[in-house]
Image (cartoon, rainbow over all chains, first blue to last red; front, side, top):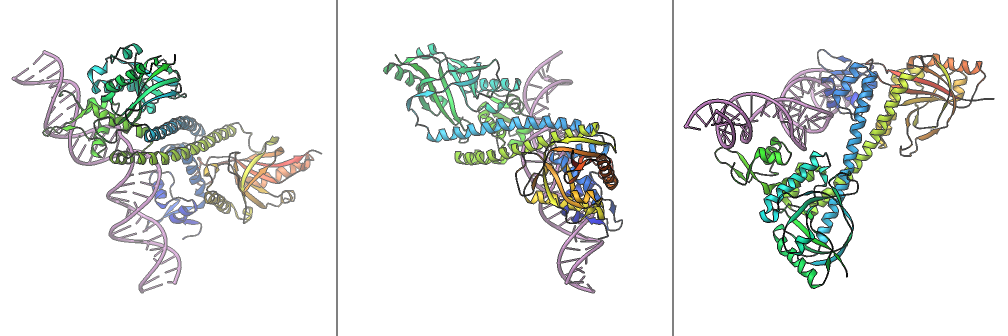
Length: 279
Length: 279
DNA sequence: AAAAACTCTCATACAGGTTGAGAGTTTTAG
DNA sequence: CTAAAACTCTCAACCTGTATGAGAGTTTTT
């Protein structure tokens, strides 16, 4: 080692960086060794070059790309740095907003899984208080009860595309459901009305957002769409037998949907529900 | 197109995903087309497969890796999903903490640049109120005024390594500085005392953190370390001439450091300062 | 002078795709 | 029915910011 000159390994060590990273930076011209032995091709650095390397690491910590860093270092233009930083600031904010959504979605999913494990067995009928909910919904264009799962899938796709088109976070797309008018339900006709996804309070307000009021609901649990007609019937019968007055529209809510068990069918856990009033 | 079957392009379109991504998912076994024409090798999907694709996209939105998603889908174990989600939750939180630091650092840097542009010309002497500051500092092991920039660089490196060793965010490493005892300054001896980086209030408390009190400071601006001795002398002379009583230790503060203009020297903007009391 | 430690170049791998070439297949228009 | 348009196939390369490793050469230490 010549006086004042640092080998690549030394330079790497004092800067807490790897040797290969230094070689990469040399290659792309971010920071070139101040001397290269013409015979051995060994790279040698001067300790003064730390300043530049610090700057590189600092900009990297700010989340800038190597390309941008190079550009900035080459131009020597503080205006350019600033504009990149301002852009970056926005990026970071977006990322944070995104992570917040993710976090909320993860929590919801974990809760959903817990509920799945603790949920009553298929066919159980309960009378429960359900807090108010917000939904993002669209009217169904076809009554999918008549046409089967394919049509339902299509409607769901459209709902999803609508989310995308309005630039809304798709991450909510997990707890979905459909509604049916009270009248249809009471008359035993299966006529889909709306399809929706549940959203939480942070969801941006928009035209398609509705609120489902809190209240007492009579519910029945099941695990397949195929069984919906039969279980809806049971639900209605139960209401009549027990003299509950149906007070609002019928909802078929997907509590948990983990299609991990089967490739073709939605692995589901559903709760059919109607709000009731006590006379 | 056969009835009920979707070509890869159609499947891609209704799921807002690219054709090549679908091919990739096929290749890694995430989702296989339900039918492949044995002659043309064209992939065909069933609309029911949307369920699985939805799940994949949902998990992706949760920040899971494709590998993890595959694992989960193959195992069909909700416990596994949950453990991955819990791990992921922690990751997301860490990332957010990181982004918060980044955001603060970016803001500081933008401010720093603004200050740089608006700063007085070299040699200007000012008397200003400076709010209190927090620093992360280490005593200098050698008086680098005697040995020059290389030694300073080394000290700075050690400070940085100390940050890393204590697992502290390196992102603060931008506004650095050194201090000198009041007595040394008054006697015109250049003797370095401490080297530091400025940190903000969110910085984790630790043994090396000190507070520099707010107050009135006499300051002189310059743009190179090399000029420090001369400008420190001028600062002292100014204090004496104007009968300001030096009330504390001397600080050499790096306001802006953008070594974009030169490979070898720190492109700097410095402010030498001493707190003063009015008699 | 030998051994240990270091460095060189070149190649490969990672994730999660995107892009493109060149060939073959299906659908549509006339 | 045929030609053109649109689609799809495979295979390969590219992106970022490194990490890892092979095999050869160089420097430092013993």
